[in-house]
Amino acid sequence: MKVSKLTIKQLSTIINGDCGYTPYLSGADLVKLFNRHGFRDVYESGFPSRWVYVEENMKKLNGSLEFAKVIEEILDPRSFYGTEFKVSIAVDKINEIISYDGYKVIGKGKKYKIVNEEGINIEPESLEKYENDFLSDQIKKCDDKILEGDYDGAITNARTLTETVIVDILSKYDPEYQYKGDLISGYGRIKKLLKLDPSDNNYPDSIKQILSGLISIINGLANMRNEMSDAHTRRYKPEKHHSKLAVNCSKILAEFLIDTLGKQYKAEQ
Image (cartoon, rainbow, N blue to C red; front, side, top):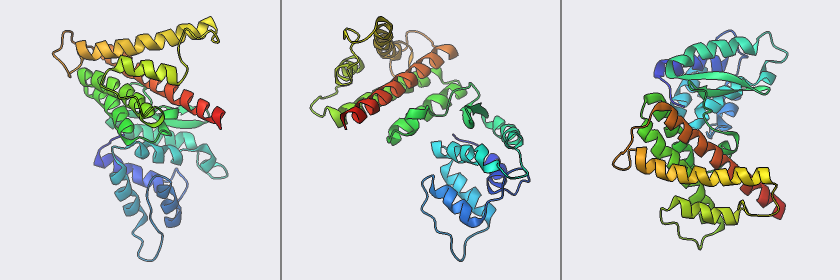
């Protein structure tokens, strides 16, 4: 998530509680907050003004997934229990500010998530927990390029997103396999590794159909990149809904592979 400097300045007073509609956070509270999002700060003598500390740290996080996570943590309804403040008011105020940068806060279950103006999650739940900086970068690029109207580039990054997950899984759990840039072949190996072959007789027909659909997604992403992306001589100019289709399919596939990997890992323990 990347926003303007003016947006960061406005968000900083909301985060530290000086705005009048979010709970007040002391300097020590703010250090704990940012340390949960990658910092290693210590609250001690000489600590800067609270608003300066928040603004500088948000500038450092700008353009990363952690930027959105800080805001989402501030909007955790449990932080508002027993206070005079209402989380709904804070959500409205933040939405008014981040709308200028193409983002909005939406309710998701009992919590709030930040999505871009197309309603695309900044990062799916399972992908948030997957430790791969390059993967996070590809997710951001996919969403940003759709917002910027770079539909060719979004399709390129959609394929790269899928490829990143496949290569990462293979490198960790099937190191003997040498990936040579063939997405279809790589998924074929993943299919065996994670037991996702539709021909497996243990699956009901409905699951077999969905697993067959995943193969179609892989084939489509591979060919879509060749025909529509900015990586090759383009034979077809993609439109916005084409790039959204590619990006959302790649996210769904990536999250499913990570979920499946996690389930099998737990079952083996």
